[in-house]
Image (cartoon, rainbow, N blue to C red; front, side, top):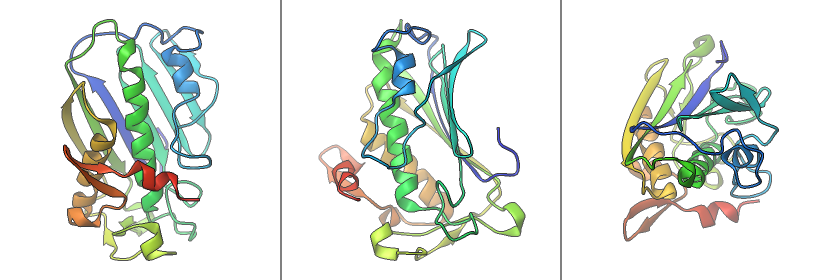
Length: 226
């Protein structure tokens, strides 16, 4: 865990005891290979790290992109992504490292939920329910509070608008969903928890579309952004 860094942590954990079949396999469609080359919404976006996975103690595999993010997948199906918030990744390039980039935030959450959807068929015993968690740490680092603006990048270029400050230095929120979850609606649900914690209304969340089943992240819109 990075120290003295602003962090966004995303996690998923099956609520029933189970295990991934192919986490330590070299087969092309194994969960290990999926972690090494995770799904992405578009080229050069805010993706999960792509690299050779390290096998750690027979319990997990890990992929690291130094200075940006790390992803750990455990044999029991727990998945943890730790992302640093700074001008080279999840923050605006304004040298303060304290302003969330809304597109980066939403896109990373979608890539996280889509990866987890991609490995659900690898469980020996399919879980019924999964707990997802979003966590923030060191939001008041260096006496500068992390901020999150409302709306899209296009609306508030270059330094955001309608900004709200993180109300505390750290925060964690968990939600439980059925294993049949829709990955893009789940991404919206996680983003909603984060935005309302900052003090925004639901309408402040960017890149959202209405579906028959409820609100969802508008992936097609994100994929058109260059």
